[in-house]
Length: 158
Image 1 (cartoon, rainbow, N blue to C red):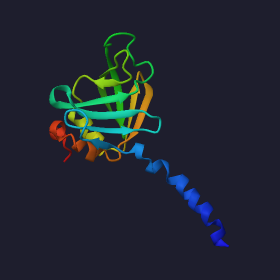
Image 2: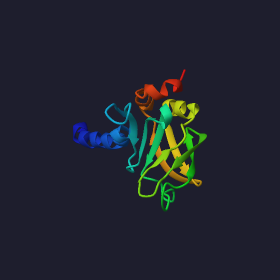
Image 3: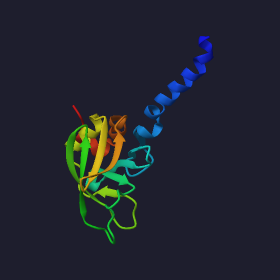
Image 4: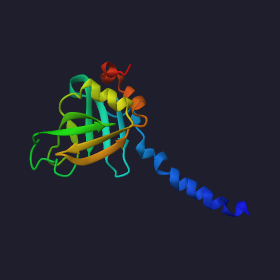
């Protein structure tokens, strides 16, 4: 009699664990992209957060697509201040969201404590103009970001 319900129990277990095991919710490192490789994560909404070496030797962050309202109407656009919430701790970071580009990128090097928090945290949420813009898991972020050792060497957690 128990065997009759086994397929239903098995399928229920698969559906409950599916989102937690989604490949898009884990950070990856691609050594063939950028100057020193690229660390990235994609959420279930199709938004992507990337980190690579840039900004004069330091890490650079890219958020794509640009959150609604953050894209400049023309040209390079002004610096825009995003609030980044990592496990309840807020960080301010300037991004530029140029016209015609579906991404926002840091113009100044992210602070050491922000990089360390990305490595050690569980989730990161982005806000622009006090409006929620994106959320990503930080599962696997430490290993992926450590792949950028050329520019995150000074950003190591103890």
